[in-house]
Image 1 (cartoon, rainbow, N blue to C red):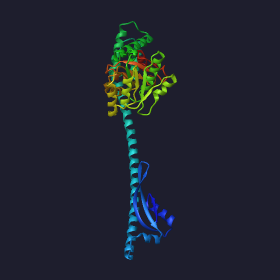
Image 2 (cartoon, rainbow, N blue to C red):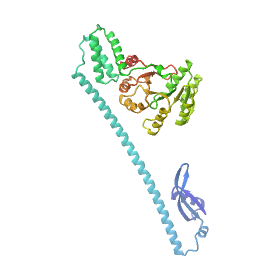
Image 3 (spheres, one colour):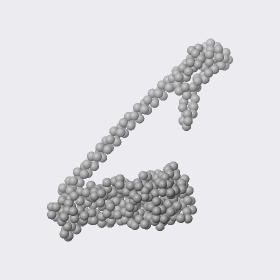
Image 4 (spheres, one colour):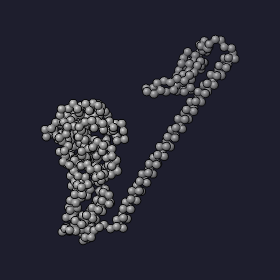
Length: 401
């Protein structure tokens, strides 16, 4: 007797015919499940033999009518199995078609939403221009200076500041110029840069970056991809050049060894820790100032975010928040609502070299009262970071750099 397995009845019968010839008699059929790696697949198993052997495998001596009935039932079972295989193939084809249609509809819907967003954005711009025409800018100066002030307003607006802020600042700037002797357009632009820097100083005050030093335990938090690890590497190498060598560790939950790789060219290293509890024990066991490079955690991952918060609150941790300079106002507010619970001592604004204007993130930070400490301006270690200054931000918003 020969048993064969195949994905369908037809395949199994073809195998039997090749092995036993056309005189083979089917003795039994059944459905079996065979493991394929971590999955299981359904197979048809058919047992068959040549005529004499098949007769020996059928219990007892069946009368002719019973034998005929057995053959009829066997044929019916084979037909049903073939029909089930056909239905399954039809169902698979139907599923593929439905999923394909859903994918096409989703793509069309995303395209429609994108077009609608663009239309709304254009409408908002149009309304802002209408408002500007209905309510002229509060300027009453000679034509040369007036043109310069209008260009300043345009740059503030294009730099991402809210129109109401642009108009208010321009009025204050015009009032300042009205009480001075400034009339040269170049002088007006310089005064505008100084003015915007002062206003940004009120909006988001900077702090001395040396406040990041003097820590017992230090960690940076922020959204994934904000540049936390690269920024830490810059500071660690810079501090090492100045003679300070704190203990450094990094979370290895996602398999990343980025911090250790960044430090090795400078003769420095970092210790891997595997879990939140390992990180806590390592920090508590350090006799020198300790720095922990945290793995990226999504603010939407409530469980991991809660464990990160628990780690920081259980230690005397100096926490600083890293945010990309290209964030919008709404994204900044959303992230501050979540990372604000860590009570960060300062905000480190990263990737200034990758954005046109930091106006969105600055307007979001203005409602939080957390000072700026450091800017990062590239990937070069350790050079591409600098103290946060309102003059740098003002020049970016005005499109001067």
